[in-house]
Amino acid sequence: MMSLYLLPVMEVLTAVWRNMSFLLQCMKMLSSWCWMEISGTRKVSSPKIIAPQDPGRVKPISVNYHFTRQCNYKCGFCFHTAKTSFVLPIEEAKKGLAMLKDAGMEKINFSGGEPFLQERGNFVGELVKFCKKELKLPSVSIVSNGSLITEKWFKSYGEYLDILAVSCDSFHEEVNKLIGRGQGRKNHVEKLMKIRQWCCDYNVAFKINSVINSYNVHEDMRDEITMISPIRWKVFQCLIIDGENSGEEALRQAEKFVISDDDFKGFLDRHKDIKCLVPESNQQMRDSYLILDEYMRFLDCRNGRKDPSRSILDVGVENAIMFSGFDERMFFKRGGKYVWSKADLKLDW
Image 1 (tube, rainbow, N blue to C red):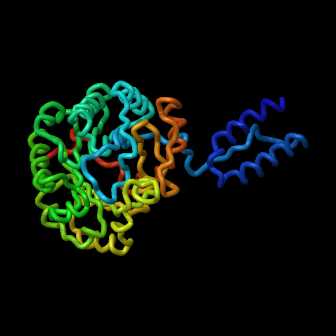
Image 2 (image 1 turned 45 degrees about the horizontal axis):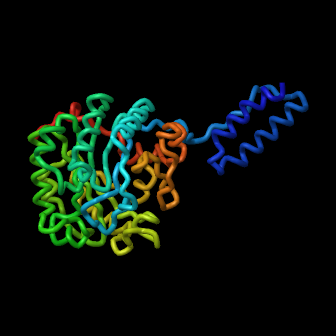
Image 3 (image 1 turned 180 degrees about the vertical axis):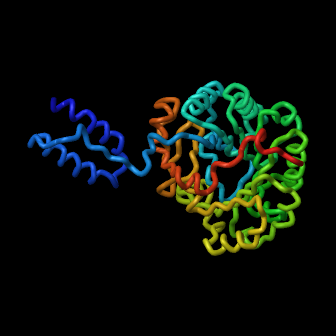
């Protein structure tokens, strides 16, 4: 009979083995339970330990899939750098996306690196089409630097895309070049405006992402953002990630781009009247995203670096997500869940 009672205890210990802060509580409860079993005074079938957040039960509502690390820009603060050139075969990627859908995913965001580098955008285009047409996800989005996007791509895949976010840190071209957001003689801001028009023509919601750093922290972007009128303007505080943009093994050294919390607040205060502004400080950003790397491994950023799980293709979504470090409460607190399907956005250009 004793072994039957121990089974639920072992399940509890297995479920919380990673959460070291609960280990002492587990040991105390187990000790009390065993004493009651021996003395014959036990009145409950097994002890229950309820963690504030059981990572094994997190539903991957919104997932960011960085399927490539390769990029044609050299942004000095980039925190997902070209450490490998690996890209999953498209059928393997589709298999993983289907697994995520079965686990509860409602929104997928494709990112990089630069997602339009692979097969001139056809790779990400086919994934977008698969997620919308086959998986029928409510929201499919892309984050891009915009440099390689063409109107031809919109003609082929625009109907399947809900949101396109283009990264733009400044409306002064010389600042973009100082940051590394540029290539040759191409004008980043001019291309941004073209893409905004294509989004209008092909009924895709347009979004802007800006990383606030030492080069643009004093810039006033109110007129430009008001004119462009994106559905969302995500404003990130420059973030340091060990091994990516800081440290001996990093491909970038972003320390010179870092700004203080007060400087970030000053930028936000200057733009507080912009209704589409969505601010994300380092604290809000670090653990509130479910990030899959090029191998479909969840990346845990809690310790200031990216520690990978096993691939969902090998161990399944539920097992891999336990090692994601995902803070679900912060995800909702920062507004991670919003109206993200263009069918519900009622786009009015």
